[in-house]
Image (cartoon, rainbow, N blue to C red; front, side, top):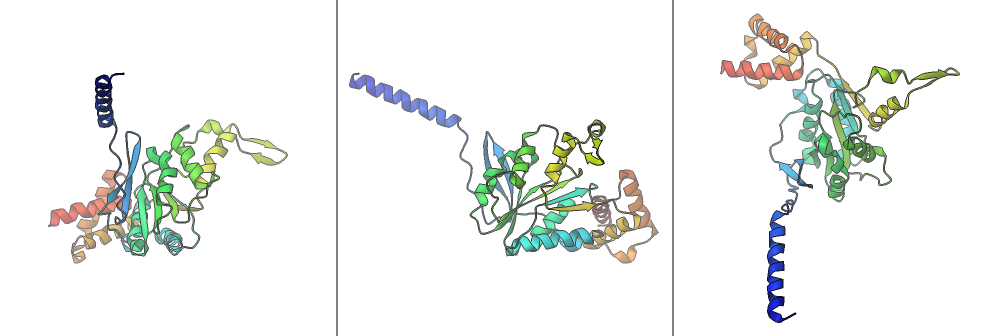
Length: 288
């Protein structure tokens, strides 16, 4: 090949490489390890840790009428932060009762001692092994947090979570735990037809294989914490707490405010901590 032809060929090759590089996704940014919380983001097959510089400032004392649940999660998190053995946690039960808020309160309580939280969407759970590798050598203690978790049959994220929890030959580093919230105790839909697979023999109960598969994931969480709907007085006590937090003079608490709070919950067909917080925000805003 003549020198002129070779030069033209190399110029065209460089031009082609430049065009290809423009089509490739940008390299993910380096993690900002100064942030107290991160959210795992993915785009075009690449994932990165997006810092959350202003996580919600909620305290354990803000969460009313779930004292037992607070104590159990607090103890487990305190063990973890101090470098002792602790369990992965599954928080299940009624919506709006403080499951995810409890995890946020744990971050607020122990951030100064090195606790960090990485929020992972259900669809990104297949990246869990990569996230674990990313933080394995860090000195901080990381909670991988999956909120409002549930799976349908055959989802790949289900297998990824199951493997990271307790199904892989590779051990999860000591500075990583998984906390998950769900309205389903077993994280997957259960059907009446599955009960037909249960059979009896010699006095022993043999669950069907479908049921066994669904229970096997939730059993990999060492600590189960259950939440229940609030009764009327518990709901009103939460309303009073948040009204005080928002600067409303509780000396003004009377039958009118009580009636408004109850009517608000009736319109929402729910008495939960979330509904109480929403009413208090509305009332404080109107009073202001």
